Length: 117
Ligand code: AMP
Image 1 (cartoon, rainbow, N blue to C red):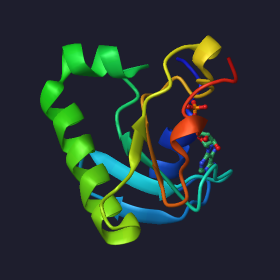
Image 2: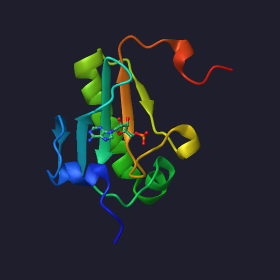
Image 3: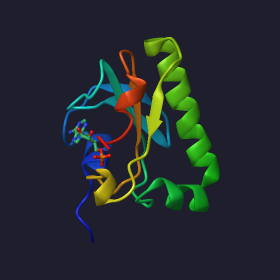
């Protein structure tokens, strides 16, 4: 058996988190190391999908539900303008291989989207 991911451990209440939303398939938490004034993570409870492409292929409804939760939280917390990021692969900064959406909002600069060219 693979080690449980940090998000599975949060779902199981083995480690604490600031839980913003939860239903039977999804949990949303505050990122522990925020990169913007609002930085949330929307995460499927299943660890079956390592990245967004796998999730889109395996359970597109769950991906759509994650986007809806992201939208609803952003409407509450950022006025509805936000950046939705799924890092995919180590080279793109992914560190937890249990798919999750980053919701970033407020104070974003358009020029901060990628690396310095
Ligand atoms: P990524 O680098 O795209 O895989 O994103 C993983 C994110 O999970 C990072 O932004 C981390 O700050 C965040 N993270 C890691 N551990 C925790 C935790 N215990 N509670 C909340 N966020 C976490």
